[in-house]
Image (cartoon, rainbow, N blue to C red; front, side, top):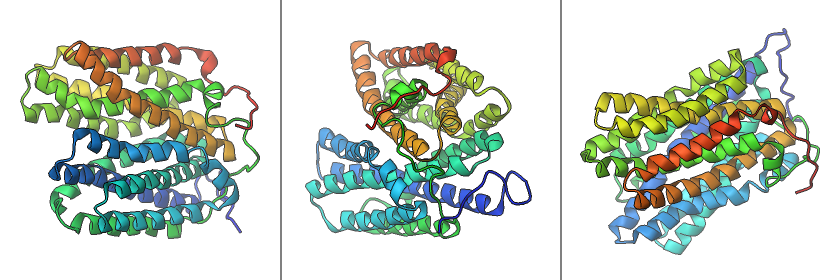
Length: 400
């Protein structure tokens, strides 16, 4: 029988031992999985590059996973109504190990596309179940700090994959074996997580697509943060080179931005616990606009540029942390699972749009079109974040 996680422990305190164990296990599992993601994305790209594959093919393979995430998001809430949470996570870990073995065992590009797509389906299970579970068992007074800690840990884990790849190298089976061992390690904490079922398993009053009508602010937050993330990761170093920075300085732009994205989530989550979450989101959106306006003008002063990028990226990413907090306030049970699955879909849309629009903008106004695109996107989100009427869920009944 599933363990019933409560908001308070038997002695009346906010946190119980099982809650803490479950939270540590879930963050540990998903953080290790973050290393896997950031290990295999560059690994497969570098293998294809060594074989003389086109950049188009390499990019297409990289997007096969997000396509799986977006499509899988439509079915995962139904799974969560029927299957206990830890069983879903353990199944995801096992499937991921099998997929890594399959990648290691074949050189077929077509097979790699299929495997990466299936990996996206597995990924959405791991992310949606974990995030829904964490939000439901976290006492509301501490939810901001917990979501901030989670996003900080996950962001740092994404930096470890490339570091591991630098140690294993690209050739041979070593990186694949390392990935299998890591994935097995990710499953171990789940043995201490207890069991989980959503607090409510009733049919949700909205679907993935209609989520934007129920919570347009949250859907837009997912879109714009992903737009910034993928546009920045793919194009910030290119921008640096085009304005005359050397290769090392151009890469450092992304490094300091990414560190800000990781380190500022915990204080932003803490602020959302102690202050009005709406005010924190408005501040995050405002810094997102101002930072995008400023960094092109300080690009010639390294220290100012790095500080600006650190703060800009960190606060802009904080919009996602606050969106998770608001989702926990507005939704429970399967509706929360549906909301988190919708996060994945709208994130995927932003991830597609960011590099495309940012790249076209740079071609039209070289190189400052990237900054202009980010200013416009951030500015639009800032304007929306000021609308008080969007800070509650809207009523909507739909089976879709």
